[in-house]
Amino acid sequence: MPTTYPAGVRFLPNAVTVIALCSGLSAVYFSFSGRFELSVAAAGIAALCDALDGRLARLLDASTKIGAELDSLSDLVAFGVSPALVIYIWELNQLRYGWAFALVFAVCMALRLARFNTLLDAEDEFPFTKEFFTGVPAPAGALTAGIPLYLWLTFGPGWWSLPLVIGVWTLLIAGLMVSRLPTLSFKTVRVSPRLAAPLLVLVGVAAAVLVTAPFLGLAVVASGYLLLIPYTVYRHRWLARHPETWHVPGRDRRAVARAARSARRLGLRPPLRRRVAGRASAMARAVRRFGEDSGTATRGRPANGSSSDSGRVNGRTSPRGDRLRLGIRRARRR
Image 1 (tube, one colour):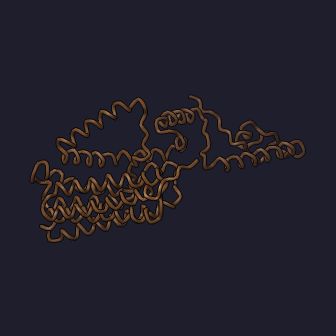
Image 2 (cartoon, helix red, strand yellow):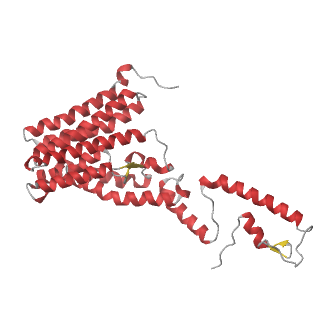
Image 3 (cartoon, rainbow, N blue to C red):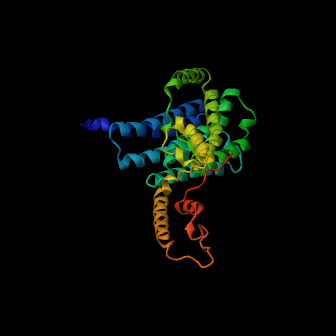
């Protein structure tokens, strides 16, 4: 029996989304007075609320169209407009065209969110597509764009706080957001029970780093996310080349791929899932042709004792011709 929640509880996801919106705007407010550490904290609260509102909506069965639209607008303000303004107020205002860098970042964030909304109703090209995002998602884009600011708050001025370096870095992150590169979706990550204890230790270490050196910890986390992109691209291409692993849990995919490679070396080539019906119909047609050829083999033979059919020898169907008609390949010898 489905659980019915009060109307006030079902309103909670939208309230969390509004808190994320207000936190993003508060980051700009703190940057006007030069308190950039509070700006980073406000952006972190916005990211936390963005991670919670969708899960609350699914848990409470409170997903609505207005909630989806409000979430997109909140993401644009909190992770697009707000970081662009904070970075501009921090250092980009010293560049002649610094405002252009901030505008490009905000526009790319808007385009990235618009594409994400249009892809929600699109049919996935592969079954594993849900495990990846297309381009860097909005919260990760805001997190990685702030790496120079995190380093400045930790180590003080340096080459990472030069206005030109910050402008180029902002353009690079903006390009990653609107790119077609696959990035990992942590919503579908499953942790093996035997890895639960080491992962909890790692979470404890991360919490200790964030408490003692929060901005350095943010810089490390953001840099680690960017370093994962080459591996994510490789993983996406590997899955596209191994359809036998599409409906297999992640921990078993390597074993399935190794078994498929061993079968191919033995000459056993199972058809792709998308081509099973086509191969089955081709097999049925070959069987029918084989029956018709066998029935007419004794009635008419060429005068010279040969046949125009490459699969026949002296009016009879050779074993090789049978295999070719039935689509059976002979195993290669080692």
